[in-house]
Amino acid sequence: MDLLANLALGFATALTPTNLFYCFVGVFLGTFIGVLPGIGALAAVSMLLPVTFYLEPTTALVMLAGVYYGAEYGGSIASILLNLPGTPSAAVTCLDGHPLAKQGRAGVALFMTTMASFVGGTIGIVVLTFFAPALAAFALAFGPAEYVAVMTLGLIAASAVGQGSPVKGIAMVVLGLLLGFVGTDINSGYARYTLGIPDLRDGISLIALAMGLFGLSEVIASIRASTGSMTAKKIPFRSMLPTRPEARASLAPTARGTTIGSIFGTLPGTGQTIAAFIAYAVEKRVGRDPARFGKGAIEGIMAPESANNAAAQTAFIPTLTMGIPGSATMALMLGALMIHGIQPGPQLMTTHPDMFWGLVASFWIGNVLLLILNIPLIGIWVRLLRIPYQLLYPAIVVLICVGVYAISNNVFDVGLALVFGVVGYGLRLLGFEPAPLLIGFILGPTFEENLRRALLLSRGDVTALVETPIAAGLFAAAGLLLAWALWASLRPRRPTKVETVEG
Image (cartoon, rainbow, N blue to C red; front, side):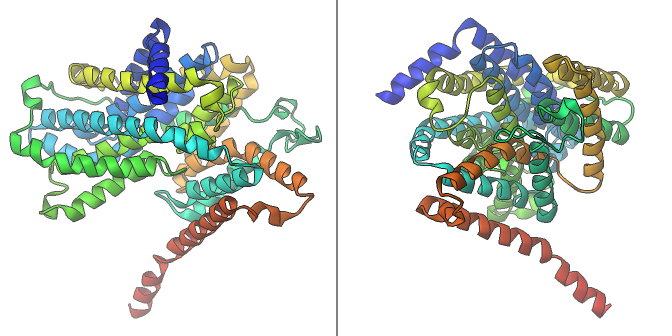
């Protein structure tokens, strides 16, 4: 009965005209930005974060969440039509989606992608609805030591479980932690790492950092990699309908992909990209004819698409109930809550039940809106891909600069965003992923605050951090994950040395 009452409260909140309007705006913009290659949900949320400063907290979260999972829907469109992933998690869709488009069956690929995204997102919402309260109740037992342990696990997971080198990921997390320490120390009042610059006394702007690392760096990379404009053909609705054998063959991959996405979405630092690639790898291994994959297999579309959309929804579980971002975009959601003076954690469901359940209800509404939008508006998204780059990217840069300036009316933050844009592009060239840096930046101050609190309560006794079973278990898991990351980073080098000696 409590769950039904909470859902009733949530839908009453989400169905207000204002929240409903911004939910639609969020999913529409998210789909549009997802279609554009090289932008992605992270850059979109970064650019729209200043806008939410002038909205009510619930409305702001509803819109940002809509942008987030809307981009996961739209990211596969450019992947299928042009072999250009709109989002990182849509990259795996290129493997079988684009070959289908080359065979003249792009409509089938787009339709099945939309259905897989809808099913995966819906199951992810069910998991969020039923398991978030239980996890929040469990999190009530957390003290400062437990929070230090879970944040340590989240930081290591963000660096160790990724596409690049785990060592590079750890380096980025540490850099993010250091950037998070810039500003005035809460306890002593001293300015730390400000280099004598008064504008840094309040710390580095989250919006300037995010927009620079993910928005401007993406624009620079896309401009260098692309010229001219993209073209695409019209897609009639009839060509979108799959055959009966294809529909039957897609059921099991969708179920497996949704399960994988729901699991990986709840793990801090993993996210949709890893879930999508693992779902594809699993499907290729259990498939009857692995040789079909990469040549237009419908299973190669359904599994990763259902996985990344399920992960997009379940990523809200650790973010809202424990204050630990499940992905880099979730770190921005965490920042949005903090901007409005709301502390995520186990108390969120009791102190702001209308916000929490209103957000959950908006997921249901947004998922249906995306299903309605994606199928009829595919032709419009295809036409938008024809916009010349020389017109598209300057507009994005202007929006970024206006957004950064509007949040604090400070030109220094605009310059800071430009600097981080160049730095972010340089990190990409060197093979460093910027996402772990953002997670470290968000969690750094909270990690330090809980560590100090735990040490003060124990009078400086470090062993107090591992006295409780929960904290000890989390630290042990963090240690094992760190050891695995270091071992995995060294393992590929051994065959290379042997081959060199033999050669």
